[in-house]
Length: 80
Picture 1: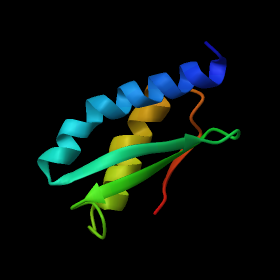
Picture 2 (picture 1 turned 120 degrees about the vertical axis):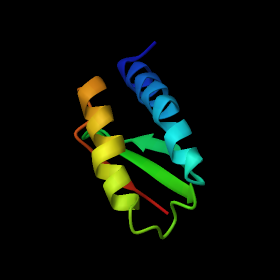
Picture 3 (picture 1 turned 60 degrees about the horizontal axis):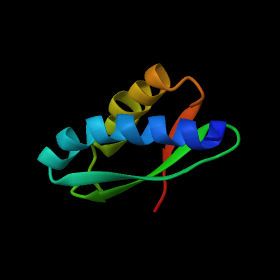
Picture 4 (picture 1 turned 90 degrees about the horizontal axis):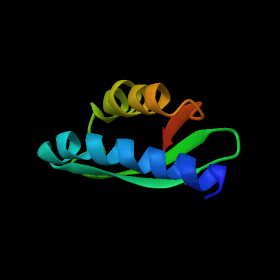
């Protein structure tokens, strides 16, 4: 397995652990891509779209967890 594929697999594993909390509020999170500079792009779904708390969820919940468990991640951004 390549380093990129291994990193993406670890990202997906962390997102799977976070997903139930996001789903309990009526939303969901989808992994889109990992860029060469370490940016994880995700897509928010359901209640997360347009929710005022989604930026906090993104930064505190998702980005903090990903950066803590997957050191290759430099930042997380949401895409449409």
